Every structure is written in structure tokens, then in C-alpha cells.
Image (tube, rainbow, N blue to C red; front, side, top):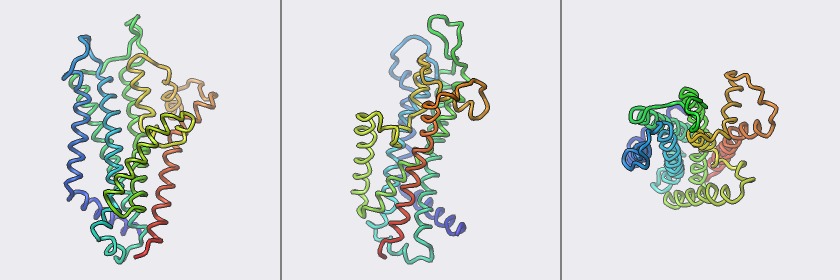
Length: 291
């Protein structure tokens, strides 16, 4: 089974590399990150020295928001495009289980999520450091007082990049699930984007208590606090202190705050739960689909 899934995954990646859409998405992603990081150089808003962490986080936030739509579109095309092109019937008569086809497409989405994350990370950190440089986060009134060192901010940024792969792949899996339901590729893309906008903008924006049970807010769950930290607002630094404590990097006694512990745990569990649901439903629907 494993060898068959590997073969199918290589085939999926090969098909993806042959499509012009893949290279267009990469170009657009690079352009978004580069322009976001260099915006202070292109359109300076202050004469004061710029700490590179601000452009780094701006480029990361814009890059991940944009990449979520890219992977959503790609996911929503994985099955629907096969139906539109008439190749799905040929695939179903091949000597592979239908569940293996779904798993191969899921692995492809995971590889894309890692690739997009790596591109955003490499570009944003490399450009921000080379153009602006990284400085410690200091108190604006007492400049000799350092709130956080540059190494600590980079560690927190690394946490964010590792975590964000989970909600990013969840967005792609939602697109894959819709792709299984909708046969037409164009309609599948449109439906996916509409549902994603409803979840991310309408429901998450209007119903704050409900938003923690959606997967969309967790795309920037750690990046937004870092953005605030770089501006000297340290209210949400506890998120990173809890992670530090979990890895044994901190000895602070902050584990008694149950609500904060649950919030951090939910940032991992909720997207994973949605990913499992989308995966299970996609496999079931494809397995029961008529040839």
C-alpha cells in the first residue's frame, strides 16, 4: 500500500509541475512577500530606523493569507478538474484503491503547504535581515531596557512557521472535500472561496466566541501577537511562554492558567480535528462514488 501511495503521490506532483497554474501561484506568492517586506523601503512612512522584525511579520502575514487562497484553489481542483477533463473514470479503473488516490492528493497538499511555508519563511527572514537588520525589542521610554532579544523573537517566529502548516493544510483539505462534492472545476473553486470567506470574515469576525472553534483564525494565531510584540505590546507573549515551558525552555510557573493552556492547545487540536474530518469524508465519498 505504501509503495502504491508513493507512486500516486509522485504522479500528482508530476501533474502539478506540468501545469502553468503552479508556477503562476509561486510567482504571485513571491511577489506578495517581497512587496510586503520591502514596502517600508518603497513607500517610507517614517524617518526612524526600522527594526526588521516588523517587515518580517508583515511579509509573513500577507504571504500566509495569500497562500491560504492558493492552496484552497489547488485543493478544490484536485478532483473536480479530473471530472471536468474526463480522466476520473480512467483513474478509477487503475489497479489502485480509491482511498489511496485521496491519500496521495492529501500528501500533495501537505508538500505544497510545507513548500509555501518554506518560501515565505526564507524570503521574509532573508529580505528583512539583509535590508533592515534585526534589533532587540526595547522600551520606547527607557531604551536601555530590553523587553525581548532578537533571538527570542526569531524563536517565536519559528514556532509560528511550524504551527501554521497545520491550519494551512486544513484549508487545502477543505478545498479537496468540496472538489469531491462538486464535479465542475470552476464551480468547485468558486464554492470553496465563498465558504472560506464566510468562515474567515463573516462568522469569525462577528462571533468571537465561535471563532475559536473554527480553523481559519489559527492561520495568524501566533503571527499577530508577534506583530504586536514588535510594536512593544506584550499582552499575548504568554502564548510563546507556554510553548517554551512545554519544550522545557522556560521555568516560569504559568501552567496554572487553565484558560490560556486550553487556548494554546486548541490552536493545534482544532485545525487537526477539521483536517481529520475533511480527510475522512473525502475518502468515504470517493469510495462510494459510482465509476
